[in-house]
Image 1: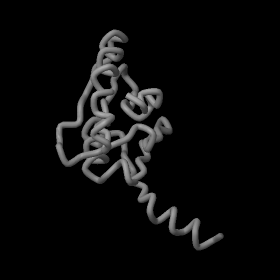
Image 2: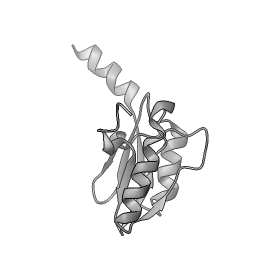
Image 3: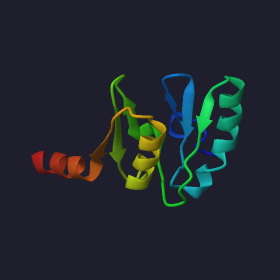
Image 4: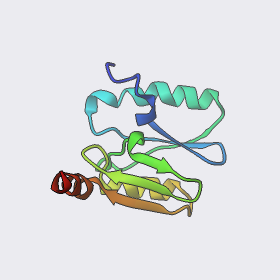
Length: 110
């Protein structure tokens, strides 16, 4: 699996010894979840999964500040993926950040 060195893409670790396995957009990356699941189980973390086949989420698009999760809506993470994170976050705010708007704003400035 050529992208498996980017382990931050396959899981979002959460407070309370919990983790959410992501659902990569690229089908070639989905088998990486199996290996990560094994590691999380060995660490004794409670693991949640993304159940929607429409959802895609990349852990690299998620930032946890201690008070909220910010999730970039990008080519790899869609709104259904952000909703899956919202469900797993158990009341911690999840704030969507549309990355296309940010990219367009950066191009306008340059």
